[in-house]
Image 1 (spheres, chains in turn cyan, brown):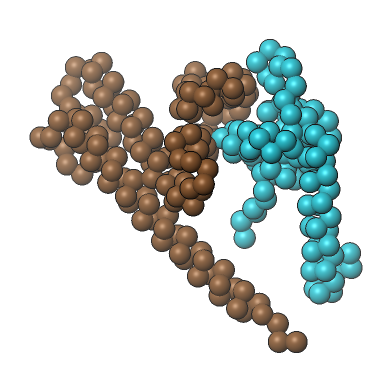
Image 2 (image 1 turned 120 degrees about the horizontal axis):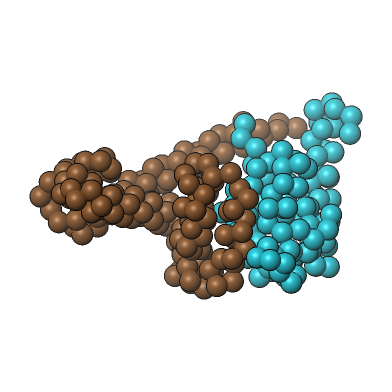
Amino acid sequence: MRKEVDPELLILASLAGGPRHGYGIMQDVRRLTGVHLGPGTLYTAIPRLERQGLIEAMTATDRRRPYRITQRGAEVLRERLEAMRTLSTAGLARLGVPA
Amino acid sequence: MRRNTFTRLAWLFPPAWRRRYGPEMEALLEDVDPNVSAVVDIFLAAGRAWLRSLVPPAWAALRALLLVPVAAVLVQCCVLGALQLTAAILGRSLTFEVWLGGVLLWSAGPPVEFTLGVGALAGALLCGLVAASLAAWRAARVGQVSMAGTSTD
Protein backbone atom coordinates (compact mmCIF):
# COMPACT_ATOMS: atom_id res chain seq x y z
CA MET A 1 0.00 0.00 0.00
CA ARG A 2 1.24 3.48 -0.83
CA LYS A 3 2.41 5.55 2.12
CA GLU A 4 0.20 8.64 2.19
CA VAL A 5 0.86 11.24 4.83
CA ASP A 6 -0.45 14.79 4.88
CA PRO A 7 2.51 17.03 3.94
CA GLU A 8 1.18 19.84 6.11
CA LEU A 9 1.22 17.60 9.17
CA LEU A 10 4.77 16.51 8.35
CA ILE A 11 5.93 20.12 8.03
CA LEU A 12 4.29 21.09 11.32
CA ALA A 13 5.90 18.09 13.03
CA SER A 14 9.26 19.06 11.61
CA LEU A 15 8.97 22.70 12.67
CA ALA A 16 7.90 21.61 16.16
CA GLY A 17 11.57 20.70 16.59
CA GLY A 18 12.70 24.25 15.79
CA PRO A 19 12.86 26.71 12.88
CA ARG A 20 14.04 25.30 9.54
CA HIS A 21 14.25 26.39 5.92
CA GLY A 22 12.84 24.38 3.00
CA TYR A 23 15.70 21.94 2.48
CA GLY A 24 16.07 21.49 6.25
CA ILE A 25 12.38 20.54 6.47
CA MET A 26 12.75 18.02 3.62
CA GLN A 27 15.74 16.38 5.29
CA ASP A 28 14.14 16.36 8.73
CA VAL A 29 10.90 14.82 7.43
CA ARG A 30 12.84 12.10 5.64
CA ARG A 31 14.86 11.37 8.78
CA LEU A 32 11.77 11.42 10.99
CA THR A 33 9.32 9.40 8.87
CA GLY A 34 11.11 8.09 5.78
CA VAL A 35 8.75 10.15 3.60
CA HIS A 36 10.31 12.12 0.76
CA LEU A 37 8.62 15.49 0.35
CA GLY A 38 9.10 16.87 -3.16
CA PRO A 39 10.09 20.54 -3.57
CA GLY A 40 6.77 21.32 -5.27
CA THR A 41 4.75 19.58 -2.57
CA LEU A 42 6.70 21.45 0.09
CA TYR A 43 6.12 24.84 -1.51
CA THR A 44 2.45 24.09 -2.05
CA ALA A 45 2.00 23.31 1.64
CA ILE A 46 4.13 26.15 3.06
CA PRO A 47 2.01 29.02 1.60
CA ARG A 48 -1.15 27.24 2.76
CA LEU A 49 0.17 26.84 6.30
CA GLU A 50 1.26 30.46 6.27
CA ARG A 51 -2.18 31.65 5.14
CA GLN A 52 -3.78 29.63 7.95
CA GLY A 53 -1.41 31.21 10.46
CA LEU A 54 0.05 27.85 11.49
CA ILE A 55 3.63 28.77 10.55
CA GLU A 56 5.42 32.06 10.02
CA ALA A 57 8.43 33.13 8.00
CA MET A 58 11.51 34.43 9.74
CA THR A 59 14.12 36.81 8.33
CA ALA A 60 15.84 35.25 5.34
CA THR A 61 19.51 34.36 5.62
CA ASP A 62 20.99 34.44 2.12
CA ARG A 63 17.99 33.36 0.00
CA ARG A 64 17.02 30.58 2.37
CA ARG A 65 14.10 31.65 4.53
CA PRO A 66 13.52 29.73 7.75
CA TYR A 67 10.00 29.09 9.06
CA ARG A 68 8.77 28.49 12.59
CA ILE A 69 5.60 27.01 13.98
CA THR A 70 3.15 29.45 15.62
CA GLN A 71 1.26 28.93 18.87
CA ARG A 72 -1.85 28.07 16.86
CA GLY A 73 0.16 25.70 14.68
CA ALA A 74 1.42 23.87 17.76
CA GLU A 75 -2.16 23.53 19.05
CA VAL A 76 -3.40 22.17 15.71
CA LEU A 77 -0.48 19.73 15.54
CA ARG A 78 -1.15 18.49 19.08
CA GLU A 79 -4.87 17.99 18.35
CA ARG A 80 -4.18 16.05 15.16
CA LEU A 81 -1.48 13.88 16.72
CA GLU A 82 -3.74 13.06 19.68
CA ALA A 83 -6.53 12.09 17.27
CA MET A 84 -4.08 9.85 15.42
CA ARG A 85 -2.94 8.30 18.71
CA THR A 86 -6.55 7.55 19.69
CA LEU A 87 -7.21 5.90 16.33
CA SER A 88 -3.90 4.05 16.44
CA THR A 89 -4.53 2.70 19.95
CA ALA A 90 -8.06 1.57 19.09
CA GLY A 91 -7.00 0.00 15.78
CA LEU A 92 -4.05 -1.85 17.30
CA ALA A 93 -6.22 -3.11 20.18
CA ARG A 94 -8.70 -4.56 17.67
CA LEU A 95 -5.83 -6.28 15.92
CA GLY A 96 -4.68 -7.72 19.22
CA VAL A 97 -1.47 -5.72 19.19
CA PRO A 98 -0.54 -4.19 22.57
CA ALA A 99 -0.16 -0.39 22.33
CA MET B 1 18.55 17.44 -16.17
CA ARG B 2 21.18 20.17 -15.80
CA ARG B 3 21.26 22.04 -12.49
CA ASN B 4 20.65 25.46 -14.09
CA THR B 5 17.60 24.24 -15.99
CA PHE B 6 16.27 22.51 -12.88
CA THR B 7 16.65 25.67 -10.79
CA ARG B 8 14.76 27.66 -13.41
CA LEU B 9 11.71 25.44 -12.98
CA ALA B 10 10.77 27.96 -10.28
CA TRP B 11 9.88 30.29 -13.17
CA LEU B 12 6.92 28.05 -13.99
CA PHE B 13 5.02 29.50 -11.03
CA PRO B 14 2.73 32.56 -11.29
CA PRO B 15 4.38 36.00 -10.89
CA ALA B 16 2.79 36.79 -7.51
CA TRP B 17 3.94 33.43 -6.14
CA ARG B 18 7.45 33.97 -7.55
CA ARG B 19 7.75 37.39 -5.94
CA ARG B 20 7.15 35.87 -2.51
CA TYR B 21 8.63 32.37 -2.76
CA GLY B 22 10.78 32.42 -5.92
CA PRO B 23 14.22 33.11 -4.40
CA GLU B 24 13.83 30.53 -1.63
CA MET B 25 12.44 27.97 -4.08
CA GLU B 26 15.45 28.50 -6.36
CA ALA B 27 17.76 28.14 -3.37
CA LEU B 28 15.98 24.89 -2.46
CA LEU B 29 16.29 23.56 -6.01
CA GLU B 30 20.03 24.18 -5.87
CA ASP B 31 20.20 21.64 -3.01
CA VAL B 32 17.71 19.05 -4.26
CA ASP B 33 18.66 16.13 -6.52
CA PRO B 34 17.28 17.03 -9.99
CA ASN B 35 15.49 13.74 -10.73
CA VAL B 36 12.33 12.99 -12.69
CA SER B 37 10.03 12.72 -9.67
CA ALA B 38 11.16 16.16 -8.45
CA VAL B 39 10.47 17.65 -11.90
CA VAL B 40 6.98 16.09 -12.04
CA ASP B 41 6.33 17.28 -8.49
CA ILE B 42 7.28 20.85 -9.47
CA PHE B 43 5.09 20.79 -12.59
CA LEU B 44 2.10 19.65 -10.54
CA ALA B 45 2.80 22.29 -7.90
CA ALA B 46 3.09 24.98 -10.59
CA GLY B 47 -0.24 23.80 -12.04
CA ARG B 48 -1.81 24.09 -8.59
CA ALA B 49 -0.34 27.57 -8.07
CA TRP B 50 -1.64 28.79 -11.44
CA LEU B 51 -5.07 27.37 -10.70
CA ARG B 52 -5.06 29.05 -7.31
CA SER B 53 -4.15 32.36 -8.93
CA LEU B 54 -6.74 32.04 -11.72
CA VAL B 55 -9.68 30.20 -10.14
CA PRO B 56 -11.57 31.81 -7.22
CA PRO B 57 -11.22 29.98 -3.87
CA ALA B 58 -14.94 29.17 -3.87
CA TRP B 59 -14.43 26.94 -6.91
CA ALA B 60 -12.07 24.52 -5.17
CA ALA B 61 -13.76 21.46 -6.72
CA LEU B 62 -13.21 22.84 -10.22
CA ARG B 63 -9.61 23.58 -9.31
CA ALA B 64 -9.03 19.95 -8.28
CA LEU B 65 -10.62 18.73 -11.51
CA LEU B 66 -8.47 21.01 -13.67
CA LEU B 67 -5.15 20.31 -11.96
CA VAL B 68 -3.92 17.44 -14.14
CA PRO B 69 -4.99 19.01 -17.48
CA VAL B 70 -3.30 22.31 -16.55
CA ALA B 71 -0.11 20.50 -15.56
CA ALA B 72 -0.30 18.53 -18.84
CA VAL B 73 -0.60 21.76 -20.84
CA LEU B 74 2.40 23.21 -18.97
CA VAL B 75 4.47 20.11 -19.74
CA GLN B 76 3.44 20.07 -23.40
CA CYS B 77 4.14 23.77 -23.85
CA CYS B 78 7.60 23.33 -22.32
CA VAL B 79 8.37 20.24 -24.44
CA LEU B 80 7.19 21.87 -27.64
CA GLY B 81 8.96 25.13 -26.78
CA ALA B 82 12.21 23.23 -26.22
CA LEU B 83 11.73 21.32 -29.47
CA GLN B 84 11.00 24.50 -31.37
CA LEU B 85 14.17 26.05 -29.97
CA THR B 86 16.16 22.95 -30.89
CA ALA B 87 14.73 23.01 -34.41
CA ALA B 88 15.54 26.72 -34.73
CA ILE B 89 19.13 26.16 -33.56
CA LEU B 90 19.60 23.24 -35.93
CA GLY B 91 17.91 25.14 -38.77
CA ARG B 92 15.51 22.28 -39.42
CA SER B 93 11.89 22.41 -40.47
CA LEU B 94 8.95 22.27 -38.07
CA THR B 95 8.33 18.68 -39.12
CA PHE B 96 11.58 17.75 -37.39
CA GLU B 97 10.54 19.09 -34.01
CA VAL B 98 7.14 17.44 -34.16
CA TRP B 99 8.71 14.14 -35.17
CA LEU B 100 11.39 14.43 -32.50
CA GLY B 101 8.90 15.10 -29.74
CA GLY B 102 6.53 12.33 -30.65
CA VAL B 103 3.96 14.35 -28.75
CA LEU B 104 1.60 14.75 -31.68
CA LEU B 105 0.25 12.08 -33.96
CA TRP B 106 0.72 13.91 -37.20
CA SER B 107 3.95 15.44 -38.37
CA ALA B 108 3.47 17.79 -41.30
CA GLY B 109 1.11 20.39 -42.60
CA PRO B 110 -0.46 22.54 -39.91
CA PRO B 111 1.45 25.56 -38.56
CA VAL B 112 3.11 25.13 -35.19
CA GLU B 113 0.67 27.37 -33.32
CA PHE B 114 -2.16 25.15 -34.47
CA THR B 115 -0.42 21.89 -33.61
CA LEU B 116 0.66 23.33 -30.26
CA GLY B 117 -2.89 24.35 -29.42
CA VAL B 118 -4.52 21.14 -30.61
CA GLY B 119 -1.81 19.01 -29.03
CA ALA B 120 -2.14 20.78 -25.69
CA LEU B 121 -5.92 20.53 -25.81
CA ALA B 122 -5.87 16.86 -26.78
CA GLY B 123 -3.31 16.10 -24.09
CA ALA B 124 -5.31 18.01 -21.51
CA LEU B 125 -8.52 16.20 -22.43
CA LEU B 126 -6.77 12.83 -22.38
CA CYS B 127 -5.19 13.52 -18.99
CA GLY B 128 -8.53 14.79 -17.67
CA LEU B 129 -10.22 11.58 -18.79
CA VAL B 130 -7.49 9.45 -17.22
CA ALA B 131 -7.67 11.46 -13.99
CA ALA B 132 -11.47 11.22 -13.87
CA SER B 133 -11.32 7.45 -14.53
CA LEU B 134 -8.73 6.99 -11.80
CA ALA B 135 -10.81 9.06 -9.38
CA ALA B 136 -13.94 7.02 -10.19
CA TRP B 137 -12.03 3.75 -9.83
CA ARG B 138 -10.56 4.88 -6.54
CA ALA B 139 -13.94 6.02 -5.21
CA ALA B 140 -15.46 2.66 -6.19
CA ARG B 141 -12.59 0.82 -4.51
CA VAL B 142 -12.90 2.87 -1.31
CA GLY B 143 -16.63 2.12 -1.34
CA GLN B 144 -15.94 -1.61 -1.68
CA VAL B 145 -13.40 -1.55 1.12
CA SER B 146 -15.72 0.33 3.48
CA MET B 147 -18.57 -2.06 2.62
CA ALA B 148 -16.32 -5.04 3.27
CA GLY B 149 -15.07 -3.43 6.47
CA THR B 150 -18.55 -2.87 7.90
CA SER B 151 -18.72 -4.83 11.12
CA THR B 152 -21.66 -7.06 11.95
CA ASP B 153 -21.62 -6.51 15.70
